[in-house]
Length: 335
Image 1 (tube, one colour):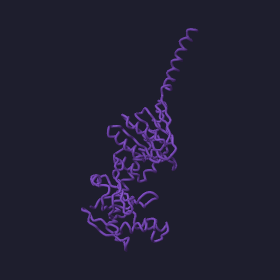
Image 2 (cartoon, helix red, strand yellow):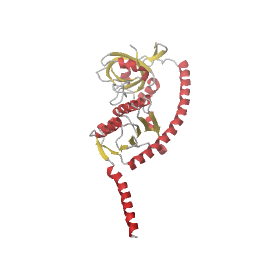
Image 3 (spheres, one colour):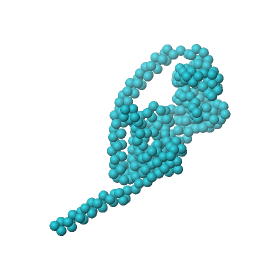
Image 4 (tube, one colour):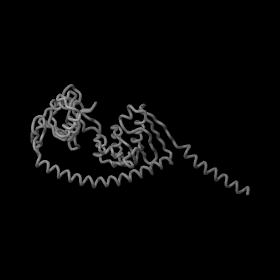
């Protein structure tokens, strides 16, 4: 009986030692913003990653992080991203950049109208970063946030299981929306063709349109200058319209219409994610209009210089905000 105990006790001791050793050697670190340490830690993990990065994020609008993800993808790191579905409808330049760069990017709804509110990343299936910190510029600069970095194997495995669940759900959702999108695109093309054949110029200035030859096609532009446009929708509101009247006028006569204006370039995007942003000033040196160029126009954008006068075309997309300029998409240069 005594001998049996002697053999059992060492076995229990070794099992206990084996279990506790993983805990003893697991490294966990707590970080806080806005001290700058969380974003830097995320970026360092991306830079040092060798094989894979799995990201589940409620929102991802940090240009610095997007830049580093793009470089990691170029060197062969497999990157999968699941984003909350409500971000899909927002025209964020970072998400557009990730889509254009061919990232494995999917969107996921929460249950019964809720959110996919996770924010975590798994690096090389060995390390997890998670916490309240959203991957945005705002979180880094203004919010009080936290993040935990751990390589505890048990914790990492649980996050791996959760990501697999989220990713598979998002794939199902993506496949459904893909087929819906194909139908929508086809319908949209048919509607566009029908509209093109029946579209009539607007009746009077400033809402009338003029036709210009843009090369292969003739494009209708609103016959209105930037200053005239800004008098209607800028802070002056020269026509003294109510907010409801301005909104109705914008939606019915201006949104989605093409313009041709001339201004001075006051800034250009220089990073991988914002190269297609160009700011145009018409008045006091600050950006009045932000141009958004398609990837096919990259060579043209590279030739644009800050301070140059630029005649540009594009489609009105959104009005000026509290601290943001008017947005013009599908931009092109007319010089």
